[in-house]
Length: 84
Image (cartoon, rainbow, N blue to C red; front, side, top):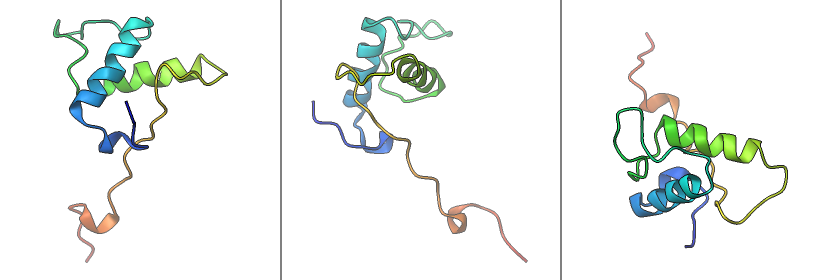
């Protein structure tokens, strides 16, 4: 699979493949706390924590799980904050 560099550019199927990789190597439980399957293609807090823990525990780069970066923050003018 050819991965973009940012999480927000990954398709739901690409996210699901990463989740399945994390489950396969034991970095993520196969079920969410709700009991739903963890490989749902949604990059939520469980996936993010498992992904971060995976890379924090490995000093060398492995190709089994791709390296992705977070989506960029929204610019200040997109937020609902109004200056007056």
